[in-house]
Length: 519
Image 1 (cartoon, one colour):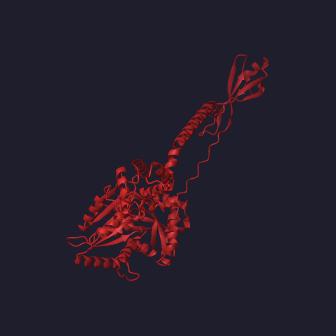
Image 2 (cartoon, rainbow, N blue to C red; image 1 turned 180 degrees about the horizontal axis):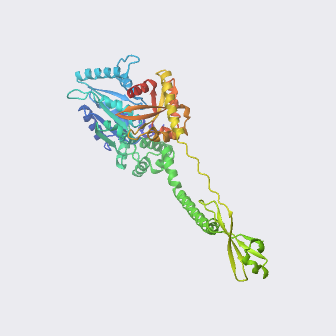
Image 3 (cartoon, helix red, strand yellow; image 1 turned 135 degrees about the vertical axis):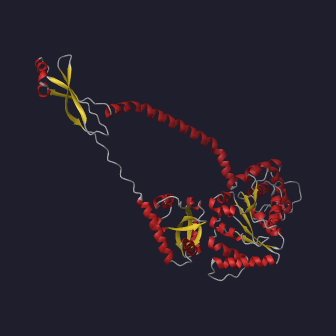
């Protein structure tokens, strides 16, 4: 729409990576040169980390474009690949003819033979793994085993991992340290600065056919840079909308007003704007609530003082109960004189002490002997204190039985269902072999099962044990699916807390292989 208005031949700010628009500023060119050097010199595993929209995919496309012809590349864009499927996926990308139902060992032999042939021809093979932070760690470990294929002088396969900062978190896991220690080069894509963004904008405008002065004013670039937070994809989105706003105003330079309109029309821009708009109001509201809560607490404490004192007298100190009775009925012989002198009744003060450790309380009778004297005489106990019944013991066997039950159900399903049946691996928990007794070993597992069962139906939860790197793990699975499309739909619809554990697809055939290693 606005292209002829600004003298452009094509869209300058499409978010689809286009190598014709590659920007070498912001350290991107230096990282690209370092990647080419590392790959051509056979430097093991390489890692590139950057935020969403920082330009990782563009770097990957550039590598495929500028690497020497002797380098054959494999591109893995789908992170949800099960460990037992990743070798087949790589073989497919290399156009290898893999027999149907070929097991892992057969595929590995085919890959090794292919890599040796390529090495004999003076060629290299490199695997680019996109979105590596979303790939299961077991799958990454399977890829890592491929890096062990080598001759006396050279590695047969190079691996480049592209991922978001979560990739570093995943690689910090203890059981993946073998992969982490084989990373020879690690690069981080920093956000673009305001100066870099100004150069980035004009470079893309020139590549799209523009020949005039800079379309964005310095103030507009500064405002756009603050909103984009240095991420190239956001810069593209805001720049495109800003040019459209300038076109609507029939002007030939983008001003802060046009950038502001672009920010308000962008999803991330609305979130930023709302945050700034309501921050003060939210702070005042929180402060007001804190004051109200403090006042309510002070009032509660102040009102509770008097009742508290009364409760102490009632529960701990003896209470006095006044009972009118004829003196002759309760007085010993020594008190007959008092009775004859005109005293017709006695005041009985019965202290009743209720405690948790005692079921009876002592009772004394205070009787007047004369106008100025009283005599205390013991009488039978009159008050009993109730002792609360002990709490019922917590049943700790129920969850343990649930673990055993789900292990048995899983074993039955694995025996009876087709090997091609697909399930979702939710989580893998280590079992501490140093602890004695299944009750202690499964404490973490029981807590995790309790959490998951609040979000998923327990009848579709399955468990099995496996050994990985010499340690025993309990794997939590969910569901059974005959078709891959059904499993992907179920994966997409999992609750967000479950998705945070990065679940992925598994086949019963692959699970049976894990179990065979336990025997």
